[in-house]
Length: 371
Image: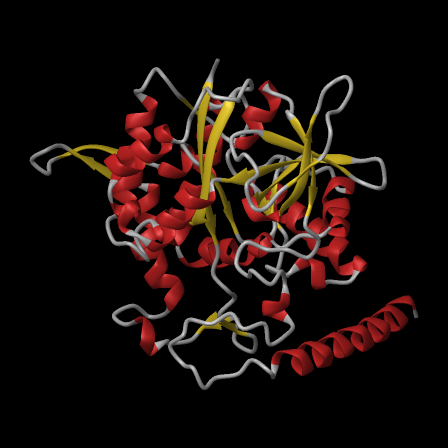
């Protein structure tokens, strides 16, 4: 039975433009670069778009656009900056999607993203639809096609957000393993539900049936490998990464075409971990030349293989806060431990104030817009 590997890179920078000037001002902390957008581009996005593969003597034997061999998404506001300030890198990102369509059966590797990196479960129903629609329209303008998948910021999810995506025609999302609440096998007679404790099998595709009657697919990325990519030296060791990916396959108890999929911030490769761009390129090249596995993206896998399981999610969950989405609205306790005297008690009143202001501004906008 076929075995697949998919590596997803989530690339995002917050909008840093001065709203009065429309430009990013000098940021001393990003020295020797002008600002953090430029620094991350120089250390990661640019190198990953032209990554070096070297031989044992350190000589360059090939240059690879790694984005053409992985699944990826770039935040719309980041792409707007790249289009203006680093057009060559921007063009390489668009070209990567075109190349991936040739490699992956007509399915591009680029995924859309909701427009403003909004934590979707905390958004109003109207904002959910707007963020989804803007993200899709921005994607179509840039990549020249409809998106098949959409990245949810911080993988933050609830059923209403999935409904907004499915209504807009999105086919799949990617979440963390601990966000699956229960699953059951999809058969002529569906099997019994099995409650989960963060142990959903990440090598299968899942189908979420929604209250509206719509559905979409969900992939759950391999948590241990993804975490090691982010927080250990795995991202700079292409051989070790290649080995870890292959070790994740097992024939025992799995009678579906397995997809070992991992997800990490795209900045992992070169910015957080210098040299990660080269390690990623080496690993992808090794996988490309290994007849026992096939590199793929999520869209191609779905076109070939229907979801094996039905899944229900944990409502208001995310990949970066064990308390769900409390990190963005409450004193949840998530911290680095570096400042034990700090408190996050300011979050709740700030969230309440911003939500109140947004609701009032929306009322004014709707009233004046209709006049």
